[in-house]
Image 1: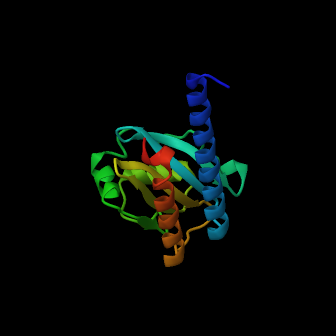
Image 2: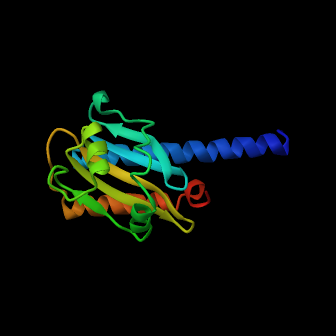
Image 3: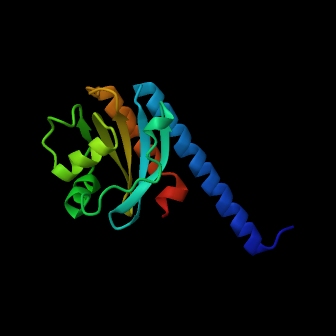
Length: 164
């Protein structure tokens, strides 16, 4: 029988593996159901600093795994909106009234249409669930927005997310 410190490590690894599998399955299913080019999880590891930690892709050329975005573009003002449950569906980034740094980032990431849903825990904004259409603009349906919200709500109650 392993000692208690080793058992603690095994337990944590097991929870993290289960969480990671759930996140990957969630992003894969969302991408397939929306026929999107990319669905990612953007995790905040420090006050409004984060990075893409999971992605599901229609093609490897759309990979942005590890991307963190430009410093200062996502600031307290944006964070406050998402902390209050903001959902942002942008069918065409070129005509949407968004900040220049945001548009530049989306262009750099090859995004034509963007859907962002917050992952909110009792501790606040944990991350963002984001879907991208990269090959064309796209009108997000109410059902797709609801599916993203349901997925974000489901992730928010996973113990290894909720308790962090």
